[in-house]
Each structure stands twice: as C-alpha cells, then as structure tokens.
Length: 195
Image (cartoon, rainbow, N blue to C red; front, side, top):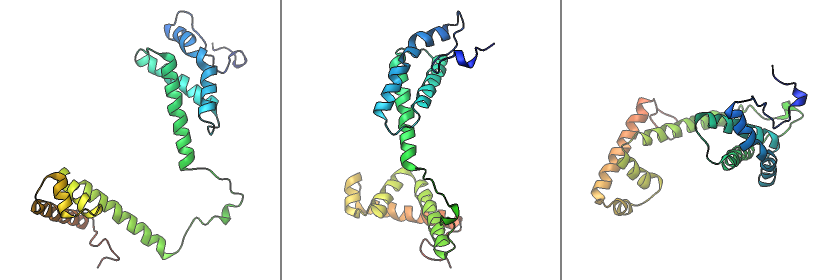
C-alpha cells in the first residue's frame, strides 16, 4: 500500500527495502534536488514552473538508469534539467500565450482573396522545395547554388571543380526534373494562375 501523500516530500520517492534502484536514487539523485532547483531558477529565470523541471528530470534519470548504468548521476541530472528548461524557453519564445478578454475582437478568419492566393503560393513553394529535394545530390547542390543562391555558372563550376558546360547541363537537367515533378502534382506554373 503506498504511503499517504502527506508523509511524502515532493522530491521523495518511497524506498522499498532491498530494491537497488530505490537505494541508488535515494543516495545518488535525491540529495541534488535543492541544488538542481536553485540552478534552474538561476540559469533559466523565464521558466515558470521549476518544480516541474526538477520532477521531470528525476523521472528521466530514473528511467535512464533502468536502461543502462549512469556513471555521474549529478552531471546527468543537471544535463537533463538543462535540456528540459531550454525546451521550455524555446517554446515560450516561439509561441507566447497572450490573454485576450474578447475573442470576438480577434481577426482570426480572413475572407479576402489574398488569403487563398497566399495559401496557394505556400503550397507551390513547398512543392518546389520537395522537387529540389528529390534531385540527385550533386545536381541538387548545383541547382541550389545557381538558381537559389544566385552564383554565376563560373562560380559554381569553380566551387565544384567542374567545367562550366557540366554546370550548365546539370542545371538544365535539374530544372527539367523539377518541372516534371511539379507537373505530376498538378502545378503547371509557379507564378500567377495556371492556364
């Protein structure tokens, strides 16, 4: 029967007598809880729930030790916590949550024709990226340098140690393959409306 919640500390893991995993955790990991909490607060001040990072770190080191031995528990624990905190910080930078009192005031749905055109253009760009990615490696590299990065035929040839004629042939083949790739997906023109 598990111990009552009030008798278990937040960092505590009930130790089963004779269980080597429990003994290892109590001796090698748990004592670092306070310093880990302090480290996360100091190193990642934007992380709101430090205790969640600490508990998740404990859980991950526990699971990792079940799979293989851990030579430096403290170093491993702090590394796990660092990665977890960095993930939280990154997520906070990418998608901050702002409270809005009146949801009807948000301009979420755009009825203009520009939205449909923008979505169509995005689909075409993704299809073109897929087409370029499908090219053989050397051909793809040459096409990217020549067509997307704007290097001259001479610069591309020098970069790869090829003749300018070889670069010209590779670009022509790459463009032709990309056009075929797009046509098979119903895209006949990257600009404007298809005819």
